[in-house]
Length: 296
Image (cartoon, rainbow, N blue to C red; front, side, top):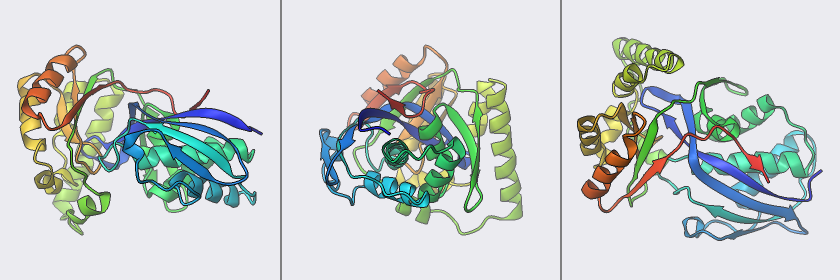
């Protein structure tokens, strides 16, 4: 049973276009938590990105840790935690999933739960409602999964060998608002097309065929046609990225971050063009993160 430690959890993107609520990819932004046993719950935040979050047991990490232990019939001992993060909040970069993964890991270590990977996934899926971001933050790399109510299924896919470039706008887009933009139902024809495009996307990634994967990423039917109007950078970024040889540009999760996948060696050129065109945004060059949470 652990009494102190440092935990590093990766951020993630979800969907990659048509893999709606199913495909996740972990990358090189992180939530870092220094944690130790304490007489009471406390959270200190060293990063400006975390300003305004609760400092007591109402913090998401504490809520998740206590619930995780409760599911095993164990009392979760209080901890004091110091957090640093370079994951922007409410930007479609999996900040909540990283916190949920941290809560599960802290409960597992500090309450000695000995959870299996499947149990971790099921708990995370209950909090998130879908396994894409939480699967990527828990296990790293690229994942494909489905939520089945009380349980979830998840498989790892080959991590894409690509450059990643993210445009992070200065404004937030709440997941609830992004979901409210979606239709309540689809016609049979649209449902068949959306499913087929998503199937092709997974098959292309399995074969490392990034040209085909890119074409499928930009043929989403489920959400991007409805969310595009909420993110003014999306259309111009896709056009510019195409001009510079990118595979695809998509909305990261529910947005507003815009994510481009490009051939190796193209990232720097595309990032420079984005910085010039979207001066009010943060432009990040990222790497795929193959690991989930790591204790140090």
